[in-house]
Length: 220
Image (tube, rainbow, N blue to C red; front, side, top):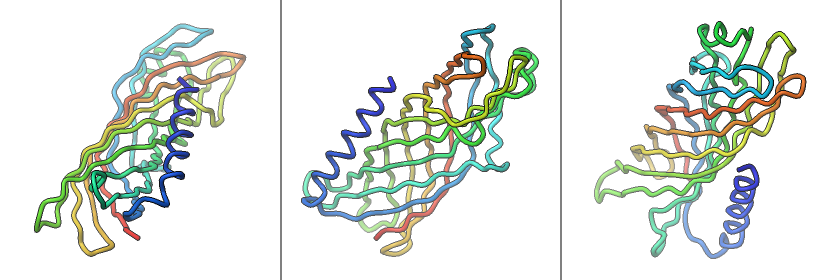
């Protein structure tokens, strides 16, 4: 899975670089925040009992949930209304009190981020005579969580490559001026997380994050 994600991102970047001189369109940068949730997930531990984790997300607590993306929108021929984006999201999850009681761990979080980086294809549906435009998107990428585990055998507190992430999004944008627009969207990410913990242990889980985002775009 790690090899697949790395190969995909490298290939997408290379093909975009080769095609860029022949393309016609606009570059857009976006910033967003919002409300994020995450359902329970199963935790597999190589050197201890497995358990099921309930997650809190605390999207407005420090460090907050936020994201930024760069999008290139094509404006000619068959690619008109299509875009390709590079999207970074600082998503996060905290094990709830019941999870800590079940596991016997003192601390379990990915709160300096699951740190999701994805390459996505986007399509916007322009409505003639309207400043509103719905859009859809999907992509794939990687997660780089900050692993925070404290248990009887030791402590883990570092950034690691976790594995692959897939992303889907649907939203609505409003064009204020030629350069500025705002948007609201749903964005979901499914991440396969495989990381090291203290004393040579391994931790695996799959985390789904759901978010309602609000943000602004600036087009160059």
